[in-house]
Length: 118
Image (cartoon, rainbow, N blue to C red; front, side, top):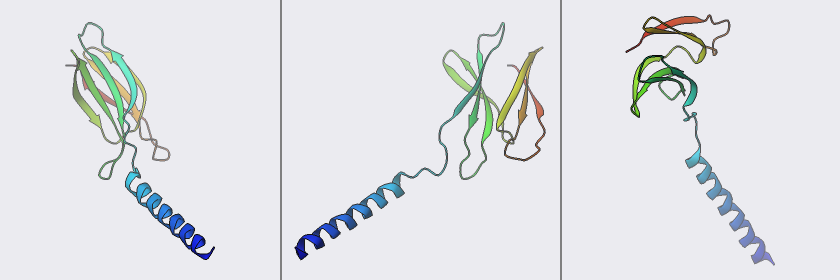
């Protein structure tokens, strides 16, 4: 009886230790998923603009990135590193204007950033 209790205790301890190692090796500190915010079809242009929110990591905060997709090829056009929320956008005369905000700061103002269309 005493031997069974010892073996059971050893099995439980080894199982807990193994689970601890597994958890430590698979722990994710930061989001790794890129969030699709908006797809913009540009009239009279052969490409599409896609706006993403890229997650933060150890060296940077989350930020907004604008990419051009043409013939299944993605090209980064701009990155807006101080912002993490796209409020609105407008297309006009060869440029797109984005109204962006940083929601991680209390009482943050919305800013307008412009990107010349290629």
